Image (cartoon, rainbow, N blue to C red):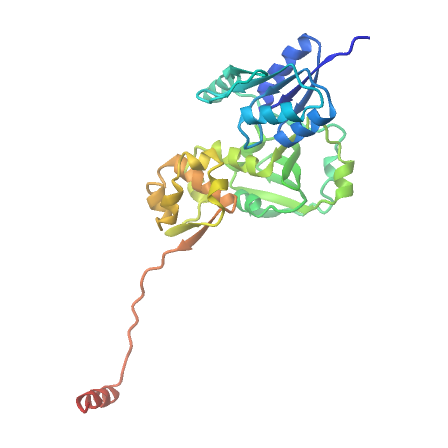
Length: 334
């Protein structure tokens, strides 16, 4: 029996991945999918791929460099590596690299549906998952969505509720997994500032027993927060996420890490932050939505500190006249 041809797809755009998969399925390819460079390297070291496809992914390595790494690490050299580039993106081609302009019709369709107000909700439901037994001590407490994600650390499982919707998920290391959600999409939970939360630790044995597969919604926690903030266009909501008051901002994360996040790098000059400017000065009195997004993002990712500017206080000191005369007499006697 003839062995099937194999393709490895490195992409974190779910809709685009589905489009590419449908093409390769039609021409009888066996398909593997990863969303980050680390997993891609592990796959090429263990498997033989005839073709590798690289698109947007959860990595900071430029696509042509990632292609070079995968080609050199591959157990068997692929016949070609296809790179889908964004408008304006430069890809250095090689004998094994072929680049294409990434089509964006799927994002245009989604944005059009959003403008028309008729986009269907994207429901998440993991098979064979018993939500009722997930968080055993399901005691809900009131919290704010920004505070919850800002302080979410370690391996935790949780249920978040807002109005009649709920989101059930957990964190394991730097990753966020969502097992069930009735929100229009998982990121839209940030549209609800006030939430109800039930949370408890998640141990490794529980994690290994969960029904997780390739269809489970999984994302790097940092990337989830960035994308959630990117989708907020409500200036009032963003102003509530950013601390209120007359604050100056100081950076506590390395500049090169901050500059890796396009939402921040495109909207805020790091030197402006270190110059002692206030939030109002940096955001045009909180009227610049994109700058508000950048600061909210840095705040939730614990990249900055805030220091409130306190008004100078006047102190009235009362001195008895008799004591004041003694002081004056002393001075005169000098």
